[in-house]
Image (cartoon, rainbow, N blue to C red; front, side, top):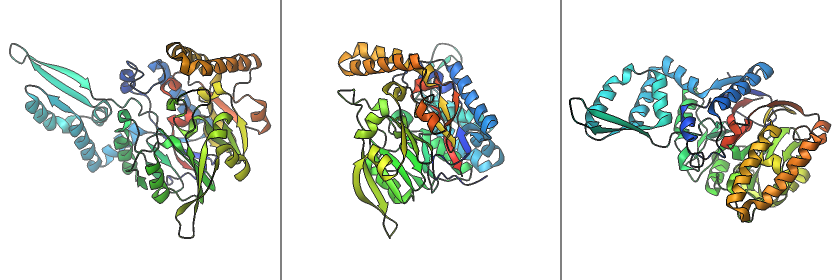
Length: 429
């Protein structure tokens, strides 16, 4: 097993880590909005989509796929210290309230050695509280179980860390619903013998905002990644000769910002190959970039300011394959690059109807904000459907020799992410 490291998004993918959607997603789907999901979806079908994605990576491309849960469970089985830490974390996460709470905690502590590793991991994921209510009669104590913000987005493995040219950067997630995710993933990396080179402690950072590109990298800042975290990453987390810090652009068709539309850099830009990008031009033209270069002392200093499209096409001489407004909303750029010019792409055409239906609901509730976006997306849908040219089946993609493996993710994208978000690329070469 090699060392966690990614120099460029198009280097051959060797090893990734994923997490199959678990019981926590069931609870998240009871209120998709508060769980940071775009829309409701079928958990059973989402799991099948995830299984197909993993099977495609393993059998289709020979990628080593590791499950987050298995990393922790196997480490706890072979190392008593890891099991003890897992037990301690479970004990501190589980809470008891009401009459008999002290007795219940003592009993749970005594029984900890008899619980299996999966039970302990479920406690970390679901964060239960047992509220004991006394009734009449002997042993008439009713346990009411509530969950304190279960980790409903833990299966989006991209966000809780990024992997760059130095190694793993452990994130500090922006939304309080997701903040505990890194307690589990950071524990997993240490159990795997891959401790993070940096744990972000100032501001917030999420892994979908880092795109390694060989001799440079792009680092997004905005709703999910703050300037303080950017400076910390530049100071300790990466070593690329140049880093372009991209300021999150507003959607050109929205009168007021909606950061969920382009929450991370990889929701409107990605790299399928050396010298090749796929992106939404209307955002690429307006997104501001602060270009940092390393000086002779090995420190980053800002060299100039520009716009993202110009930076890619002129400064870095990348060719850009454009996507439409609707395709951007359908996670067309949230593909996973397997090797140079070979990508695994969500089925954009299949996503389109569900995305449009959700956008129609949003426009009905807030027409002033979403009406123009709905009109453009509808026009895109009619044209793309009539011509059969949803990304990646475009002339530009064919001209650049893009090899594509399309997978169905129309349920999983309901949680606001595609193949890129679902995978932590741990090792490329």
